[in-house]
Image (tube, rainbow, N blue to C red; front, side, top):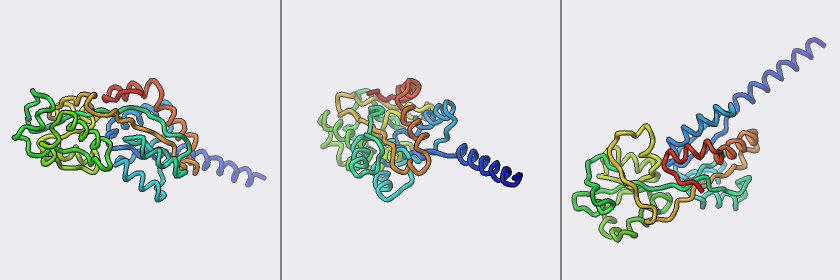
Length: 251
């Protein structure tokens, strides 16, 4: 009887340990790299639930999820990819917009921004970094902004493409490009303070970058409650403060 009691106690302790160490794995679009760190910290403080963020391209994440990647939640740079996963039966809820992303022009080379976005057409600017417009929402809207101001034809031959905002930022920070059009959330991060200079791309120059979140089917394998808590946290007042701090516009 005592042996049975000891076994049950051991099983209970094991169960508690497993539960306490459970991690929610989140696929995080590259524009959210620094924002997610703060969201994660605040969420863990409030709930005690651990989050593991993987940073990358929303398009690549979608392909990986379709091929069985073990993500519980997907924070996408747009709404199209989460909607695709929902249609394919790989999501547990309807995708929801958590924020609208905004654009900034960023340089480490001392480009003159006195004429605003017209700086991109300046002959002294040889290379302009943007994310791939074919797969990255920020790249697509960067092209729209260039077209809005009638400088796309002049700028097109200067464009160098990153597969995501993260790679685009590498081109900018290493001066492989003279400047780049990137996510405002990156240049507003405390980690980037004092690095280069930047200006806003006026929001009337491009379509709002609606970013969506969805809980994925993989969460059913053990992290459903925790994943749902994180999903709900993203629409809390605390999360709203964090998104605004990083230059996002709320829905």
